[in-house]
Length: 415
Ligand SMILES: Cc1ncc(COP(=O)(O)O)c(C=O)c1O
Image (cartoon, rainbow, N blue to C red; front, side, top):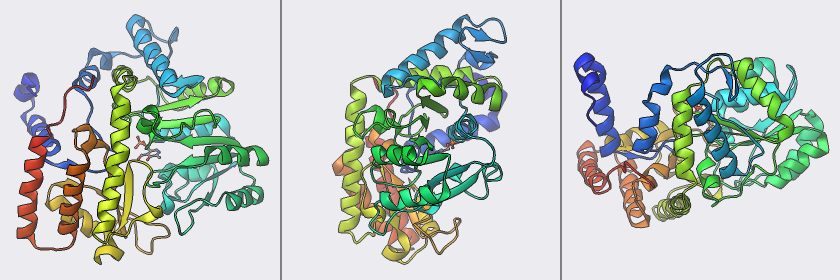
C-alpha cells in the first residue's frame, strides 16, 4: 500500500511497515489469535477519529463535538448486540485484558474469589496467573481439564462449593473443546456466584453461529475483536441489562479514559462484515480447516492435546511427537515461513519460555481462502520441518510456502 507521507517523513518506520506487509503476505500466519482485517477496517482505523476525545458514552459525553463519534459508537453497539443477541454491549475496552479487569471490577469487591481455568490447561493470564496485578486484588482458584481433554463438571461443582467463588469464569486461550455453558451457569447459580465467559478466541465462530453462543447463559461475556472475529485490535463486553450500568461505569471512569474512537469506528465496520451472510461460510470453513489440520497431524504421528479440536485451533505436544521443545518447534516452523507460538501443555513440566507444545490456529489462512487441500499440504510441511534441523531442507520448504502464499493473496475486501 502506498503511504507517501510516511515514506517521505519517516523512512525508518516506513521501511519497517513494508517489511511487515511482506512478512504477512509471504508467510503463513498460524498464530491462533491472529487474522487479517479488510481495507475498510484499515481505513476506519487510520481515520480522523483518532483525533477525537469522547469520554463518556453516546449522548452523555464530557467533551463537545460528538456528532459523529456518537453515530459510530451507537452503530458499533447496535451491530454488536445484533451479532451476539446481547442485551447490552460496551465497545470501549481497549483490549481483551482491560475488558476482563473491568468486568471483575463491575461484579466483585477486592478480596473476592474468582474460579477460572488453570493457565496450563488453556486459561488466559487474566484468569489468575500470579504474575498479573489482578491476583493482588482478588483470590483466584482454578479448575483443570481431565486427561481426555474434557472438563469434569462434578469436580468443578465440588471446587466451587469448597472455595465459594463470587465469580465463575469460563473461557480460554488454548483449550480446544466446546464448553457446556448451561453447566457453568447452573454451578454458578448453585453456589450463588456470578458467571462470566471470556470468548476472546472463539468470538468469530460464535458470530458465524458455527459454535454455541455463550451470551444467553452468562451474566457477562467478554471478548477481543481482533482474533477469529477479524476486526481491529480491541475488546468488548456484553452483558445482561442488570449489569449494564456497573459494566459501563467500570470501563469509564473506572478503568479507562477517552475511548479510542478510530478503533470503535473500525469495530463497527468489522461488525458489519460479521453480519454479512458470507461470514458464516468463513466460520464453517475455519472449523473444517482446523479438523483437517488435526487429522493430518494425527496421520503424521502428531500427539494432539485435549482429545482434538472443536474450534479454530489445536495444541500439539512437540516433545512427545518430535522430541523437541515447543520453542524449537516454533523456530523450525519460522524457518519455513510458518508462524505459530510455543505453548504450555497441561501441568507442563517445562517453563513458559521453552514449553512442551505449540498452539496452531487456522483463522488467518482461512481468511486467505485456503481450504482442506491446502491445509493438508501445510500440515505435511509442518511435520517435515519439525522432524529435522536441516537448514537446507527448511530453505526448500520455505520456497514452497512462499509459492502457496502467492497463490492465496491476503484479500482486501470480504463483503
Ligand atoms: C481468552 C483471552 N482473554 C483475553 C485476552 C487478552 O486480550 P488482549 O491481548 O487484547 O489484551 C486474550 C489474548 O490472547 C485471550 O486469549
